[in-house]
Structures are given as C-alpha cells and as structure tokens.
Amino acid sequence: MIVNQILQSAVLRAKTLGEELDEWLTLTASNGVLEKNHSQMDLVHKSFESALERLKERCQLLLANASPGGISNEKFMEVAAIDAKVRQAYELWGSYRTWFAQRSVVRFREYLMATDGIAHDCYHAVVERLVALSIDPKGYDLRSYPITAFDGRGDGPYTIPRGNRLRSTHVDALPVPMIAVPWNMQTMAWNCLAIHHEVGHDLDKDLRNPSSEIAEHLRKILQTRNTVEMRVQAWQRWRKEIVADYVGVLLGGPAYLGFMAAYLARHPYEVLDIREDAVHPVSYLRILLVAKFVESVWGGSSTEVNAYVGSIQDDWKKIYPSVKQFIVDFQDDFRFVVDALESLPLNCLTDDQSKRHALAELCPAEPKMFERQSDAGNALLGDVSYDIELRSPRLIPGAAQLAFERDPENMSLNASTLKAIIDRLPPGQLGDEDDQQQQRIIDRFVNNFFSDFEDPGI
Image (cartoon, rainbow, N blue to C red; front, side, top):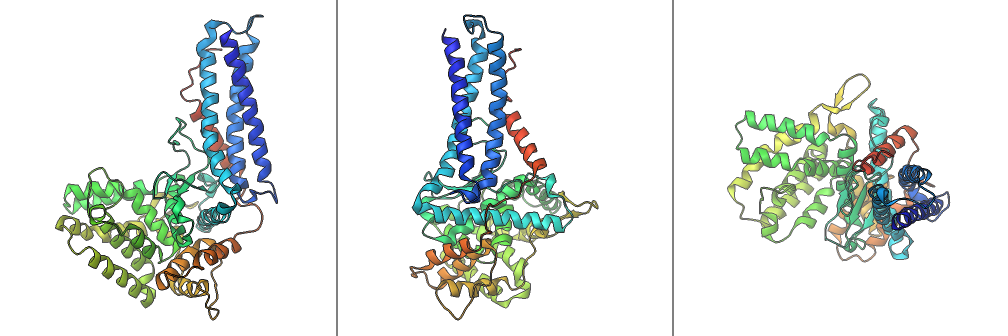
C-alpha cells in the first residue's frame, strides 16, 4: 500500500536524521573541529531529538494499530501529517547544517571563529552583568549564543533571533539564533562591529523585548509634547534598530559610530529617503543618533571621544548638505530617545529586590575605552610601541576600525585583527550549560514545531 510506504519512508528518514545529528554533535566534543560550537550544537541536537522522539511515538502508535496488511488508506491524512513534519525537520536542519558546515571550509574557518567568539563574548558580558545586578539569567533565554554564518543573498548583515521563524520554513521557534554576514566582509575584520548590532537584536528578543517598553515610553512622552504623529509613529517602527544600535555602541565601543558612518554612506536617495513602512531609521538621522549615543556614554569623560564624534558628524553633514526640514526636525526628539535608553526602568530587567534597571546598565562603559582601543589600533597596524591591552574579543573590532580610519591601505590589518580576536577567545568549548533554560527552549521549539499538527485521535 502507498500509505504504508509513506509511513515507513518517514520512519527511515527520521532515523537517518537522528544519526546525522549524533555525528555532528561529536564534532563539537572537546578538541573536536567544531569545539567552540558545542553549546549551540548541543541545543540544536536536543531540540531536534525531542521533536523526532514525538514523531517516533506517533509512528509507533499507528503501526501498533495497523492491520496485518499494513496501514490502511483511511489513515492517509495522519501519515501525510507525519511525513510533512519529517520533511520540515530536514529543511530546518539543512539550514543549521549549512551554517555549521561553513566552518569546515579552510578559508572561512578563522573568520567565523572570530565572529562566533564576538557573539559569545557579547552574550557572556550581558549574562555576567545580569548576575552583578542580581537579575537571574535563568529567567531569560540566554542558553546559547548566536551562530554566525555567511549569506550571499544581500550586502547587509541580518539576524534571525531565537524563537523566530526561519525564512524557508514554517517553524516559529529557532532554538539557536543565527547571524548572517555578507561574504564580502571576511576581508574587513573591523566590520565585525556589525555582529554587535545583530547581537543587540538577539538580546532584545531573549531579554523579553526592552525595545517595546522603550517605544511605549517614547510614544507617551512625544504625544504629551504634541509631536507630529508622523514622528511618533516613526520612532515606534524604528524601536528595534535603535536598541540594536545602542547595544552595539555599549558592547563595541565608540568606534561603532565610525563603522556605521562608513557602512551607511551611500547615494543620497538611500540615505535621505523616509518610507512609511521602514523599520530602520533614515540613515542620515541614524548616524547622528548613534553619535549622540557615543557622546552620552563616553563624551563626558573624554575630550578625544568628543573630537572623534565631532569629526564624523562634520564629514557626514558635508557629504549630505541638503536635507529636508521634516527630517532635520527628528533631531528634536533625540534627547528623549537617549534618556529612555539610559534611564528608563524596565519591567523586563527587574532584579530579585523588585528594582527595575535601565538598558544602559547591561554594559557599563569604561571611561578610557576610546583611548585603549586607539592604542590597540596602533598595535594592530604594527606599531610595537603600543600594546593591545584589551582582553575581550568583542572590543578588538572597534580598535581595528580606528586603525582602518588612520591607515585604510594597510594590507595586514585584516589578518592582525582576526588573530587578536581569536587569541582572546576562552580555551575549550564556549557557552555554559544550564538545563533549566535549555529545557524551556527545547519545549518551546517542539511545541511550535507541532502547533499546526492536527491531532488525528490516534
């Protein structure tokens, strides 16, 4: 019978998928070729393992109730639903498999190890800070850091946060976040500052959306001031990108501004155009807002930072001298945006004494960060009179950005930057084990995976 063949094929494919997942997990064992990706693969493995186990139970129940001649045609819809889920599992694992497999390509391995290390360091820094603030990290989905991978479909990075839908599937519960970087970034390691921004999106999701609380606060403030509705609505749409940029500044350092300015300096029609459906701020405003972030975080303690920010702002305004007044008017709202990010007590960041904390408290700024990154940049350029005192991998791209601004023709900067990042990665496997967080993520993945699976009553 055709129905019987479909079911047996689904059983065989599920078995093969389980065996392949086991094989990939061994690659992340201590001293394995994917050792740094252990916590990610472990969570992916257990998520799929749980889904496959549920499929196996349904198959066994069908087979146990089958007639001697096999599964009858009356059971076709039940079998077809199982078959669809197995195919869906393969499609989703196929994406993860591609992301992990990129690390087996020699020319990609070093860069992806560096970007993975930056993502891990960003997450680890936030987890440490939560503990210092007496906020239990186990209350959030911070079980494993994002996996990074190349994607050639566009020229810009993007992320798929934990729990979101992968574009090619209908599964709404991605267990491990993914950050895609364009292929053309691998020779410009200072552009790893894009990772900090994308991690900002992933943290926003994992920390239960501080961007939503900030946006609601801004809405009330601006409406109280009788701000034109177009601006109020724009800030609501831009909320996630604003938070990601602010986190990028906190985690990456002042040079995040220089990276963003160079990255977004494009034809005026891309930089000065405002669309009603755009989730990104107008690029012209975005650079000026990031400049305010940097000034607010570091400008009060560093004349060097103020000079750096001023020079970028001056260049930016010279490149784009003609800006429509209604776009310029958005700058009147900047102080309220900055204040919300720095001072607004957030419900999603409540400690064990019921005290709420602002987003800025997740990563306190070192007063001399710019100076330290500047010195490190000189060292990356080969100046032996300077040392790289930075110990966190996430801080090296900022140093490299400052170095690139000084000497954009230096052909050794990419290699020296990647080496400095990798030299600062923790030894062995990355990521901490936490069964409570892990099981919550696995359960959500499995429940979402089967959410549209009609109960056939078997």
